[in-house]
Amino acid sequence: RGVFIKTFHAELFRDLGLQKTPPGFSLREPSHSESIHCQQDRVQIHTGQLLEGQDMIILVGVVRNTGATSIEFDERACATHKDEVLAVAAWPKVVLRPGETTELYVAIRRSADDATTLRPSLLNRSVP
Image (cartoon, rainbow, N blue to C red; front, side, top):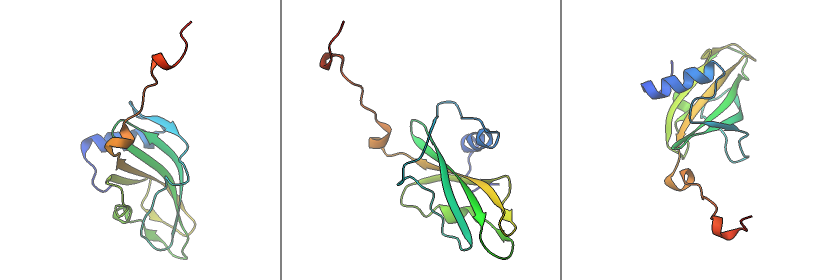
């Protein structure tokens, strides 16, 4: 199950569900501004991990049903963020009883500026 999932994204999300860091990604804590945003009532989302790749980041969070009845988490509700959302998947379930949780994976395309890292020049430091 998942929205916008192509084969490549399905493999990434499968690795995440198996608690693996996908090849080419590094794991780090998200900053305060790096969080999952979904437009669905009766859910609380906590972003806990961020995986950085060359051209995308994957936000990993936990969704909790805060309502008094069961809900079906709508993965499409997370495709409204200002960044370009490539894929969204909840695992292991999308139907949540009151108080129940599931993990949420949101893949976002990195801008060209964000994907570029600067390499420090060897000329700007002393060489032994």
